[in-house]
Length: 151
Ligand code: CDP
Image (cartoon, rainbow, N blue to C red):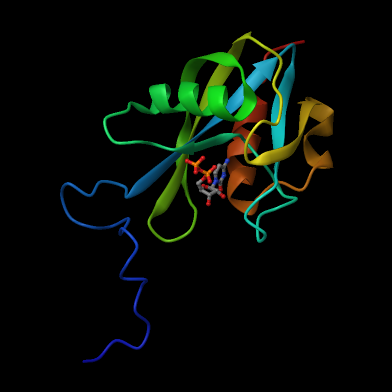
């Protein structure tokens, strides 16, 4: 029987066989500082621009998720971080992409929107709903809020 809706054959499949794993893993950081969580507003691509996310990016071959997180936050924000625990869960992005989130602690530097973002905000617990989070980041942010250390 012919398929009428082909699931984007050029994209890696999340449910593909052995060796494919989860497809493309995007790691993001729940970065904490003095009781606040860092939110980053995307500047690109157009369909995501203006929406807020936990900063991060794609895992590169041979990297551990923690290494990828350290690299991405260095590139995007100009800071050094120490990864903490993984926030349980995994959230689908576009087909073939999943989001996994780690907590992270700021070691040095003041985050600046160097790449991918045009604004950053440190949000306290009661400010977490004040930005328009990407839909796929919302459950991760809720989990991150539960782990927000005291100020
Ligand atoms: O920096 P890199 O090109 O590796 O990755 P990215 O463009 O920042 O993120 C890859 C994909 O994951 C994009 O489609 C982002 O929109 C998505 N993403 C997300 O949905 N939520 C995040 N917290 C981080 C990335």
